[in-house]
Every structure is written in C-alpha cells, then in structure tokens.
Amino acid sequence: MNKINPDKLPGSRGGRVFIGGDYNHMPDLRKIAKIVEDINFIPIIAHDCDVDLSRIHDEDLRLVHDCKYAIFEVSSPAGQLMELERTIDYGTISYVFYKQRSETDLTPPPTVSSMVKTLLNKMERWQQGYLIGYLTDDELKNIIQRVLRGLKL
Image (cartoon, rainbow, N blue to C red):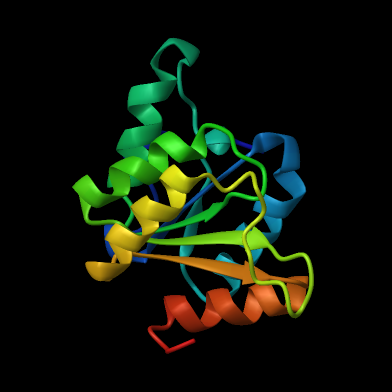
C-alpha cells in the first residue's frame, strides 16, 4: 500500500473521516474505513500516512484537523484518546464506538475512562460527539452509515 502524503490528502475536509483506534486492532479500523469508503467518504488512518516518526504527535493532530468527521474505536485505549481530546478545538464531529457486552448491557467497558465519558458529554452538548455501543459488524456498519449521512440514530 502506498503511503498518503499528509500535505496532499485526497478530497475536501468535508468528505474526510479520520479513523482512530488501537493499531493492535487494525482489522477493526480497516472495517470502519471500508464502511466509510463504501458511502463515498474518504477514510484517513494516520498509520497509512507518510509521517516521520519524530513528528507523529503533531502530524496526527493535523490529520484530525483536516477531517470534518472522526470515528474512534475506544474498546482498547491507545493514542486515539489524545486525538479525540483535540476534536473539540478543531470542530471535528466525532463518533466514539465501543464493543458492547450484550444487547442489554449498554455500559461502556472499563477501558472507556471517566475522562473520555465526561469529554463526550461535553461534546454532545455541542453536537460534536457521541459515544455509541455496538454488538456486531452489521450494527456498526448501519450506525456509521446513518451518522455520516446525517440521520438520527
């Protein structure tokens, strides 16, 4: 796969979706990217960009800034938490997903910290972010399609 030049991202800001998550679970992030791509948005995963390792922090945050939307998978916490924090500053509309335990237990896993939950409460008041649980890949696909098309959940 050719790396993306972060200075020449494809499409416009309004059509790009930053995808963040734990790279140890890259197959989950690739599924999300495929869903995003299938509805004609452009997925941006920092791992796919040609970024000098000494500049990862700044370049990743610039990628978030250059996307109107962001989808974070937070079932397993990693660097995406720093990126999520900055979405407020950038006006990036964020959707934060986690894997539910069951149909009846909607409680986020303990890996979703109180800091993240309170940040998302603040973001939701500004209609910039939402915490959403899912059980299956099909459910995740349906939710992503709905939110990126501007439909109610």
